Image (cartoon, rainbow, N blue to C red):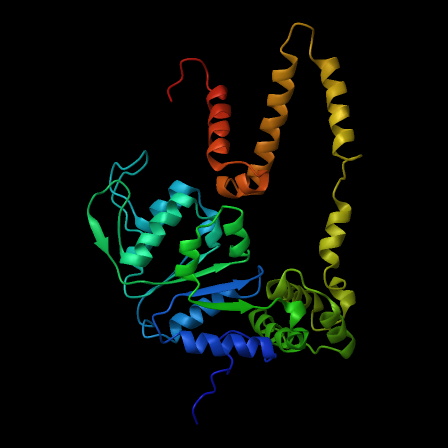
Length: 351
């Protein structure tokens, strides 16, 4: 009996109308050469759909490679995608094959595509149009046969309006859009997902599969799951570990979402709003900085540096993400970090 177009995909759980539409579009797009743009909030399973498209395509025997565009700075992402030749930049001690070459005859999944800089968007557009590029530092043109699947949790239309994303690249990528609904829009799938993860983590931990009471299922379905399927998965794994064979109930790990709100409640909170804190900082600075010292430069530079350092830590030292968080031009942020670093070097130190 032939399989229905809206039949579930491997590792993807759910029979809601929204998910059946995802299955239908995935099966229609997979055997073609059309590019696919996967849209959805974080934790909705975008990579699972990308893998399914690859596995159901004529490229299934070829490589499947994923690149998270938001996890790398501009220069690192360029080298990661296109490779480089020895001596192309400091630290390029040997030739390197990029992900486009590695994905030849297969599929390249570009996650968090809006994080890519304008310059790299132009380079990607050329690869999509002509199937060719040069490694960083090289003049030799390389041709590849790669199917590109892109994904984002942002509205690319809004990114285009804000001047952060090229409209011509959007049209190249958005041939077949597939929207993955958040879990709060398909609550009827929550029981099936919960049982799927129960079985998985009970097997992994060598335990009997515990049962979900009606009370537990009701609590799971009433929660909005802002972290989507990934948050549900983590919650079920925690329940399995803490249950020790007992029946599952919210008492074991708290109601869904409580661990996040409970953690926030335990974090130290600053007293006052931002204007109040600024006034306190200025008053303390007037007492700490002696007359004749550069008051303005000392206070403003210290605040700016501390703000940038903390945001960089929050963003995993990825300048692209930090610039977006600060609403600052990426080149400006790079220059400020360079100035801070140069200022820390002893006089006469080599660059």
